[in-house]
Image (tube, rainbow, N blue to C red; front, side):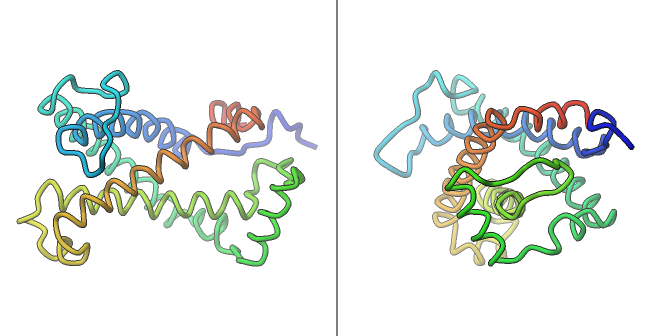
Length: 199
């Protein structure tokens, strides 16, 4: 019988996509906050110490560079998941009733996570959500970047100004996901080891 140290949990391609995405998201969020500060949507600004780029032009360069990495890496992740059957295997049995049961268990501190090879329904919902949120980030970002070149996307999102709000809220949702994800890693440290070693 294989020991837990030898059980394969995450394939190499998945770990690579995860860490490339982590770096790209960090760059996009920090540079995005600097871009936001140049033309804020709301009555607040992000502290300059939390931003990247130094000025609007520098932030845009960082943001676009990370956007290409995020988009290409995300597309590779989705395609490999789809064609390898992993997407269906990991998420195909998602059920709302099981999700609410797992949320209830989590709130009572009784959500089981002994076998890292299997996602509970809270994890499934979170990972499916962040995939959709990532797609929305890219689409709304394209509308903001090349509004004239993507008129259909602009119309579907309700116009350029609506795309700005969608992009902001999608970014906020992603930051929220990352924050919860990091808390969960602190609570279950073996998930970090598995994402580093694959086993």
